[in-house]
Every structure is written in C-alpha cells, then in structure tokens.
Image 1 (cartoon, rainbow, N blue to C red):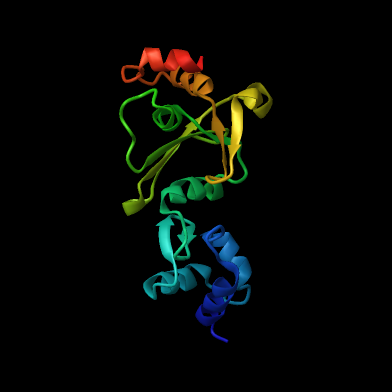
Image 2: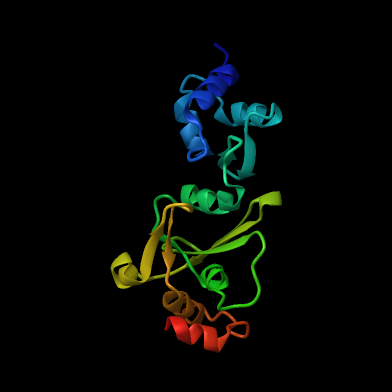
Length: 180
C-alpha cells in the first residue's frame, strides 16, 4: 500500500475530536516504511488529508474538533518534554482581570527557551522561559483537560507578569484583588 493511503487509513481509524493534533514524529512512527517523512507530510497537506499548523505539528480535520483549543494542543505537542503552563495575559484575560482579549495569541510559561511560534492563520504561541520548578508553583496550578495543559491561578499569572517585566497597565486592580 502506498504511504499516503496507509497514512489516510490509519488517521481515519485513530483520529477523533479528542486526538487529531499530531507531531511529525507521531506520523512518522505511524508509517515506518515510507522513507522520506517530510515528503509524505507535504503530499498529505497538499491532498487535504492534513493541515499544517506550524513547523512539525499537523491537524487531521475532524468535524467535532473544538477549534478554539488548537493553539493549546499544538503548544502541548511542541513542548511535550518541558514543564509548561498557561499563564500571563491568557489567564488574566480569561479571568476578566485585563480588559483586552488576546486574539489568536496564547502565552505559555515553559522550562524551555523563550520563543514565539507562528502558526499562520491559526495565530501565535508565545513560550516564555521560567526558572521555576513544578514544585515551586504546584499549589497555584490546575490541570485544564480541554486544553491539555496546566493553568496558572490568577495570583500566579500576576506573579509571572511581574517576574517577566510585562506591562501591568491593562490589569484591573480591583478585579485582581478578588483573586489575590
């Protein structure tokens, strides 16, 4: 069987609304005898089987996938080997502590290096390095199963804002006091 057909058959059987964001290494393991994986992924993208989210991350489009979670799922796959949690403006906006909502931009604290990943039409993922260890902040984190990442409390997000010297101009002090 041709590698593209083999990949299509495998994805039809495995992917669902919960599992449809894949790293290139996941897909390479699924079709071990294809040879040149980058060429296969390029052909799969051109054929409409996959959508490229960013370098090394692909979406197998399924009808019931919550599109608003794509950047979070991509971030989880990109830095799967690092300590990561949703924080900064993303958490503060969700809690109503800052008035502006970042559109197609999420901020993730990471034990890895700082970097902004351009996901084209999908938006941007901002990874901000932290030297904090999981034990240091575990009491301020909760797991968000929909986004498949840890999420900082508002108190921790405010600490992260100060630690990273981000602008606090948009923070509603009165709303922030409710959480601190």
